[in-house]
Image: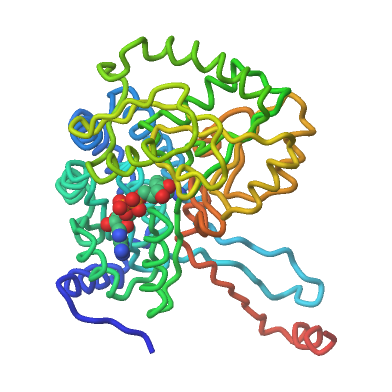
Length: 451
Ligand code: NAD
């Protein structure tokens, strides 16, 4: 039996349902206008958004512009341009035995969608799913992460000013409030967060059989082959690991390589890090901070308990929410650094003697969100891809597959289910309803009998 408990949010959810049932979000022109309004909202308030991100995570302006605002604007551009095309029904090829009948697939909105955002890219991870849901004709309630409170409050202030306030709402809630929100009946739930949050959300969704997309995390491995281009590998792995001070779901969590490859990688890493950050990383304003004291303590404890050897960085300052970009070698499988997603600027290196050992190591662990492979020898990359699984793969770089137009983004197993971005977002928030329209003609009857 479905369960809907009345609570502080019930009235708000039924008002949004009423707006959905009015049919207001169905016309393509309405959806496109709302997406354009969101674009205007971002453009007119970019400074306020950058300020909020700086207050939440001390995100540097350039990083926030590139990895939040630009991705949002690019995604909006694609959805505005293609909304009509995405929404067109798929016509099926004519079947000889049903030559006078028509069959097609209608793309219908689910209805009222709940989007739960995470704190690490707080604006992007709330708005990117929401714009897919809007494009597909749904009403949307966004619950940004409470841990990035300045960004959350700003979205709650801006969205009703720019978007239709009956159909799109922002709710500010902490964990208990989010649990109450989840007790209401939703037609779709999209959640970005940790694997445990994903489990809680899926359990809540089960009571109403609500479908979900779960964008979760985990430990994304990075294999570096002896044939790698080490200059390029060092730059691209360290960029992926240290951007947003390691607080990125698809950051390479750890490196797997031989001792020879490790030596070559570390030689380049030292050069690259000095070039990027200089000698005093702590005063470098291009480096953000850890989101809060709890996560800073957690990361500091990892550095204090690892049995590996710190070969770069290692400095911490809880008062300043500071964990220095750090590389640790000689890390064993049972080391504290290897027990959970690091989600911070610590890069462990684990020794493997071949690509096959790397494959075995990866396959013993939960399925990762991303997998990275660095090799000039293409056979090594292919072997790794063919013998493992992950949400996505990027060869000879990190993270870029997330922003590549046309690629779906999502996890598998513990790293999530479902995917989104571009047309995949439209499809994630659409029910594909099959329609067969049988002809009245006698010929149709005859052909039907012949089947
Ligand atoms: P978080 O604490 O911000 O939680 C995410 C959302 O879930 C928030 O809106 C929060 O209010 C809600 N929430 C928290 N606890 C809940 C509960 N018990 N019941 C219901 N809702 C709850 O974020 P987090 O989980 O610390 O986020 C970090 C994790 O998210 C990392 O594992 C990271 O890899 C993952 N992540 C994944 C993606 C992706 O796209 N796959 C993107 C960013 C982050």
